[in-house]
Structure formats: C-alpha cells, structure tokens
Length: 151
Picture 1 (spheres, helix red, strand yellow):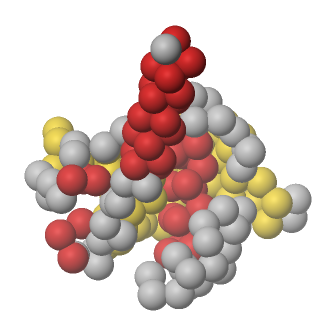
Picture 2: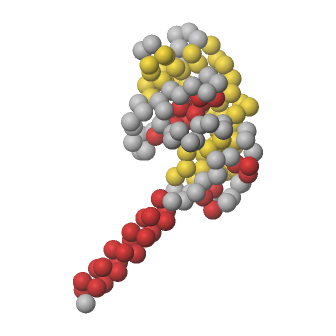
Picture 3: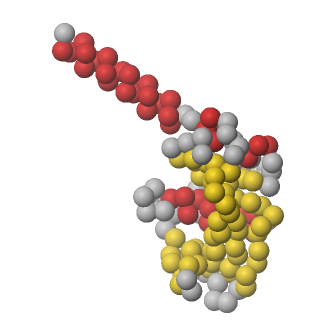
C-alpha cells in the first residue's frame, strides 16, 4: 500500500513539474513586436521595449540602455504590466569578448553560464539587447536559433 501511494505521489509530482516547465510565455506582449520576451519564470514574463534602446557611447565599452517591464501571469495570458519601466545599461567588448551590467558607475561582468539566482535574466536581457543593437548579431548565443530570426 505504501509503495502504491509513493508511486502515485511521484507520478503526480512529475506531471506537475512537466506542466510548469512547459508553461508558454508569448514572445511578444499582447502581439506587440515592440515588447520582446527575454525571460519567463514562475509565471512572470519579462519584456524588453525595443523602441527604448539608446546608444550611450563607446568608451571604454560599447554601451547601450534599454527599458523593460514585467507581466505577472504572462504564462496564463495576462498582458497587464506590473509596476513601471525598469532600465538596463549594458556594455560590450568584442575583443576580448565580455559583457557588463553598468550599474552605479561600475562595470559588473556578466557571465553567460550564471545561475537563475545569480542573474540568468540579466544574461538573457544582455543577449537580446546586443542582438537588437547590432542589427542581428548574437553575443552569447543563448537563445535557440529559431528564436532570433523574426525579431
């Protein structure tokens, strides 16, 4: 009897994990190609705002800023922006190839293999921002090849 209960709990747990892992986040917020998904986790979708991209300079790195918004329950179809706009400022060096989060006058290195807790969403935003700013060049190449073409 205990074995049967354990098996049932295990199967239900696996189904719950699989269904949450397959949660769909729209690539564009409410179909608006100006709002591009860069991260989705635990129901929250994060979208870069394409037309907010600004060139900040190139000394000592090529620097850009871009705004982004969060949408709670984006995986369930919500399009209501939560809170206001936020801004990322990124710096890129091609030789050597490094990306930075520019915060409070500091160049904080971005590591493409970071964990979610340590800033995986920032890595995704940096990748997408570079792709938009460079007219289609990948920096880290972290998204699937099918994700990039129609941006």
